[in-house]
Image (cartoon, rainbow, N blue to C red; front, side, top):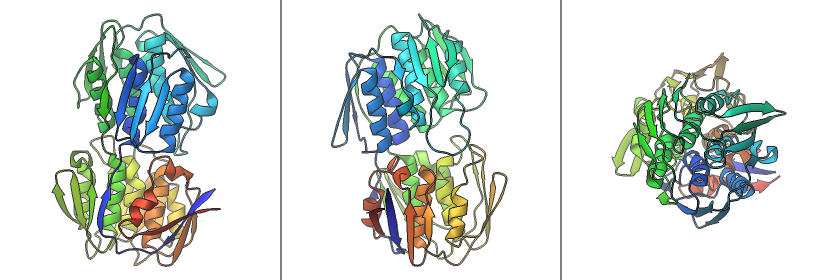
Length: 417
């Protein structure tokens, strides 16, 4: 099992480039099932999660090819409506095939999903949306069995904002008969990216960027070519790395509009920011100012950047509080950061972070994707050597993160262990 050996490297400088957004590409890959024929996606990174989704699509009957950042998905021969446990258990995003399979084949058998261990993430909102559109749902021995001769437009009221449920419902509704309206829909950029793809395919959707979406079902969709949006979480991770440095770092190929709240918090922490189109240069402060964070659905502070920002606050000059309302259990990185001599105390879903002068290297273990990124950042600023084990988590969502960070001055070595 691979691990990272990290030496202290605070003098980062130069340019670092952001890849395409994993969390946007996964639902778009599933949406390609809706349009028989060959769709082409560009700016696609080489990630374990995307390979897992590609394998699942092949099981379903699609042909998926990948080379040099371009993925082609030919869904002409899709005919097998089952997403088996051995694949779905590896990645929660596999649930995205539920809506497209129902819409195209009228039936779907999808295992309950797995993925990162960051607390309970139920799929009830997905199932309620499918039932509202006329599907019959039966839960049987860990599988979701769904059937619908013809999905029919309906009003869908989401009890809480859910990116996954919003996207799944969209993919089902675009081929439903009649009009659907979705209320309290998620507004994350990944939702907008899926809407952009569906619109290019010939779907009729109104309300992009709002909490109310109106979908008029169409008879057919058509394959397309589309560039994937940059990964806002990877960009945010690199911006925090720059804030922890002693020199300016430029993060390239960003969408600053996707990072508004993080940029506000970095300014509050004392960072200088220069935005030039798709490039953001972060100049670290002499002293990091304590800054409180509350995670919320978009456009609030992203839960996927909570762990990384916590690392920044570990070195702040004072006390900070970080509260996660999206995934209240998403604090497994705290114990590992304390092993690196951070001073963090937990009370329910609130971390009280007392800034320290420095962190110290140690052996730590990654528990999930974003915790892995946080531990890499912490290892880069910790005195001495830090070993991060179980880094297969980070390979799920960051393409060659050690190579990218080493390119701006980090000292990270991957070893088999």
